[in-house]
Image (cartoon, rainbow, N blue to C red; front, side, top):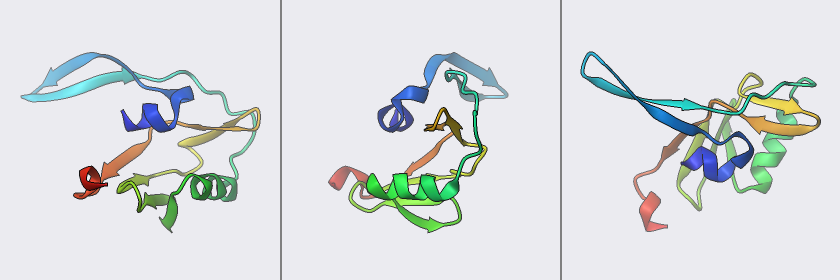
Length: 101
């Protein structure tokens, strides 16, 4: 849900669920993104900062106002398609105080 809110161009579509050895997995799909140029991670960092996310280390970000952590935004998970950043395979976490904000 967080990916769909922040990155609607690459929104997940829930196809259903899969059970394997008593573990239930969500089955999702995203629109296909074709990278047309290399992703500049400095551009990603500036984009995230403008949207309230601070770079904590490497390719990980934190929004202190929302209590949201977004990790793994390296150049294989943020593709550049026709000059536009496209976020795929995002990893969100929410801090314990998320609902208090």
